[in-house]
Length: 144
Image (cartoon, rainbow, N blue to C red; front, top):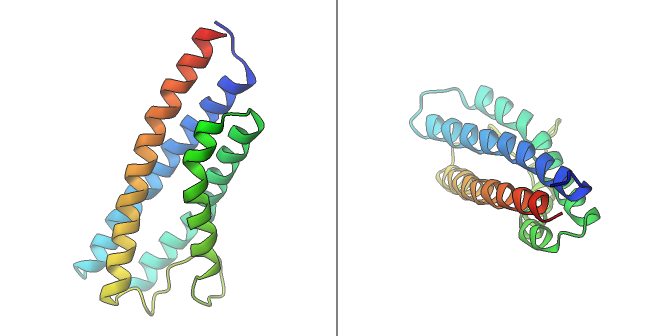
């Protein structure tokens, strides 16, 4: 049982995905509060936009580490979400700071549904990724 670079990559991926799971849960809760008119959209969008860049950065670093360690299964699993993140950030509304949620349009029914659906899909993706990385880390440590 050895701790290789591949095992380190999977360990980092576990911690990164744990944070991303938190970000996805927080997004779903915030969007649901907006949907039920419990919170101010400006405050909610500001708190959500602060999490966008760290989430994207963690996901990109995890994917890069998997590429450097030649783990093509994990790389192929992460490429579609990386492409979606890049597309979503390029198509974001014009704002003064980083982020993808605009307080002036977030209360539109379509935007709320899109944000809620995106949050649930990301949560499912990150949960599946967590267990995949956990299994892969254990498998890598046992076989090397």
